[in-house]
Image (cartoon, rainbow, N blue to C red; front, side, top):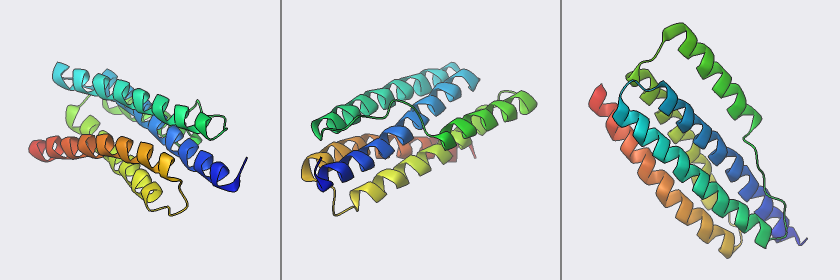
Length: 150
């Protein structure tokens, strides 16, 4: 595999892990939300993140790589922390939305970092840009929701 292809695979696989972290975070948020509106919103977001993951995985294959299929170790650890926190504190929409926004800040930052990568091939950059547009819109909406609750 060419060096530029290897680099693209590495960047895309990193984004896949983070996007899977996000999908799992949204799934957990849906399970923990009190309000049906939030449960529906978060379930839809989880599915949207899985769709983005499949697009990124497909792009990895075009570069001759093997796509990631699991979330990161940090994401798994965070999910366990959230489970523990929920067991102690119970369900609370405001707390769930605060956690979701933290996750949205992290994934948005990761995609912004990837878009600043001058070595990312144009084809990979286009896929990342499309995914970022969806992620940024979701981030901004969650931020608006959080601020309306405070």
